[in-house]
Image (cartoon, rainbow, N blue to C red; front, side, top):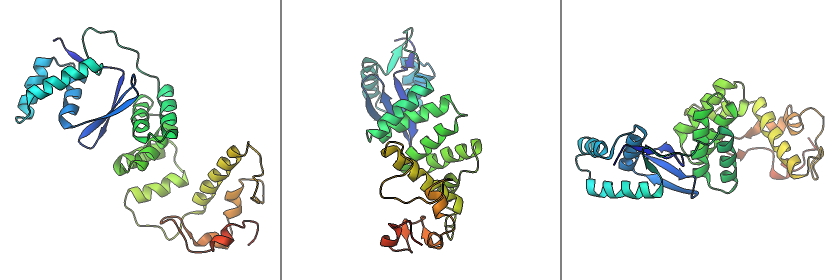
Length: 252
């Protein structure tokens, strides 16, 4: 067999000692163990089947080459690896990858969305929104190191975001603050208001809420209220006020 190449229809992203592999043609997500991951890396390097066998035997003496060769044949048949020369499909654009990642996340296919977002971040490393979404997906999957690295990259590109700074304290295993910052509360509740307005057709006033002021809605309402100084969002608990008081934002 001639040299093997990784197909453009297969997206890989490192997870632990292996890879998550998403097949664009079938829409299926696969997990590669360390040996399969090494084979994929050797295909990226353009190694021939004979060279792959030699590399595996030298690096993993206990490797069962017969089983590996059978798996490689199956991977070629599935279209994951291609023998040169083969005309490959064009690599998806970053915009297409982020759109697919968003759709997969909405469908609760977070692992697959993470693969797409990871590739988008490699293609467009200067887009802060790509890194923030990658951080969120990694955080959902409990990939703490990957989440921290993505949020740090976002923070370098767009510093000063109170929510991201708050998350980074936790992801760096820093000490919990006595309370969250006012900027964080404004950002957090301002985001909630945007989502509520989106759900209610963009109306400036959402049924069931009273939003004094006109600058940034709930965020401005929270700023300066003494009851908000006792909110501890770090551990998800509300020390004060009572749930009933929280439900009546128009009253002090």
